[in-house]
Amino acid sequence: MVEGRQGSLVSQMRRGTIAFCVMALLREGSRYGFDLVRALGGVDGMVTSEGTIYPLLARLRRDGLVESAWRESPSGPPRRYYELTKSGETSLREFIEEWARFSDAVDGLLRKGRQT
Amino acid sequence: MVEGRQGSLVSQMRRGTIAFCVMALLREGSRYGFDLVRALGGVDGMVTSEGTIYPLLARLRRDGLVESAWRESPSGPPRRYYELTKSGETSLREFIEEWARFSDAVDGLLRKGRQT
DNA sequence: ACGGGTACCTTGTGACGCATGGTAGAGGGA
DNA sequence: TCCCTCTACCATGCGTCACAAGGTACCCGT
Image 1 (tube, each protein chain N blue to C red):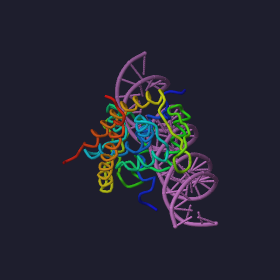
Image 2 (image 1 turned 120 degrees about the vertical axis):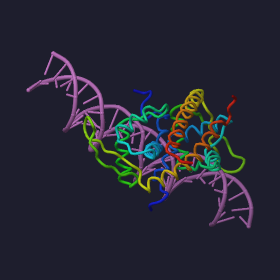
Image 3 (image 1 turned 180 degrees about the vertical axis):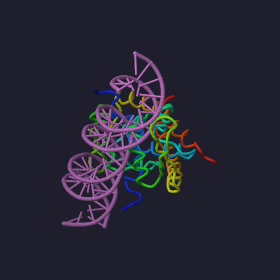
């Protein structure tokens, strides 16, 4: 119960960014939660789970960054489809600039003292 | 009291990475806390404060990733200098690989649906 | 009728960035 | 001497969120 837990230093890294990754996926078109979990799970370096995504989507809805509508599935239970609001698009654009600055800063710092 | 707070979605992004930025700075040579605050504060996109750095250094010490030693200052109160342990170097190397995967994943996702 | 895949959700835990405020040494000016 | 500023350390409390774990319900094939 020591290695690989959520509390390991590395696994805090995703905080705050997953929300915007979800919003970026929604920019391509509306999607439902379970589908988003699969989409993110298929990206190398970006693990996640339902326990992360559903509360996240609820927060985005609460904050007016996304809107949702129920649609029936051709087979299976109904799905709640999400799409970006104007506010969500603006917020996403702002984040993208923040992310560029931040990740450049981290890249620069991580190169310090390197001998490669 | 609504905008720009710590709780704004953007400001969660630094979680988990600042520790490794500090460790990367220590790879260049030993430093003391107040100096680290200034060093990080001078990097664009990487804001921080004493309230972040001192607890962080205490955690790194607790986890054996850094070691510290007191030294007198030529003028002013004594300083606690930190340096990386073997364990810290290993941990940093692992993080650098994780970070590369993760930031590539985010970069890729943020490009989705973009029209630029 | 029942097992498995799909799809939604809630609750609890732990971690940590940050604001705030507090202590103490050294040096300079009135 | 008294005070002010700068340096340097630290502790406390708040709020947020990733994740694990567990629960409900629908549909379909056997």
